[in-house]
Image 1: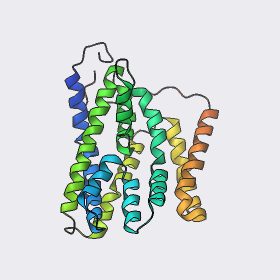
Image 2: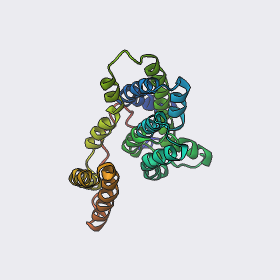
Image 3: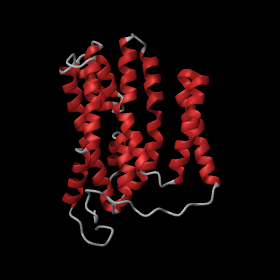
Image 4: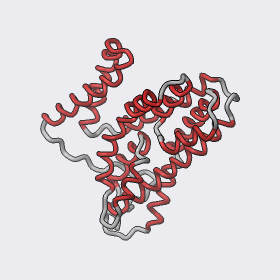
Length: 255
């Protein structure tokens, strides 16, 4: 059933998710993973290494850390700690998104499986789109969307590996860091929730300060202190009115 009580075919939900995945999110991730695939080859690793990283890690900052540290000959302990610390940000994303996907009749193992595909792009789009969908359609939409993006990144990793050397290295690195810029723009598209405004404000002010004070620890300190401050301030302020749903765009209105 859709939000208005009209029955909706499962195929309509899947088509809406596919359209979204193969639009701008897919293009941005494809460009980023082209750069990553090229980076894998330029650092001397085989294709399977890059594909295994994308298949199991699926978060570019952690994957870049893995490649760079492995290329330097770092120990497995150091690599594991660096990748784990880099990807720790995915835990609160998983905690905030998964509850909205739950519905009766879906086995727990499916939630564990789909949690693997919660990364920055899938989380940001999922948090934006799933509240607009009927509860029974949210898991199907997100699973289709996330698996599609995952497939795109695997293909792009391989393509970037074989195309390595055709573009200058600065361009390759720029492609890798295209995804964070897209996430920022996606974040700015929906600043209606006060919590987002507070988080952005604290991050903007504290980011340069902590970078100057802490150097390599500046980003981590900004996220920890700024995010905590935004949460506490938002909690202390009067409860805000729920915002009306935004237009769904190309997705069916009754999905």
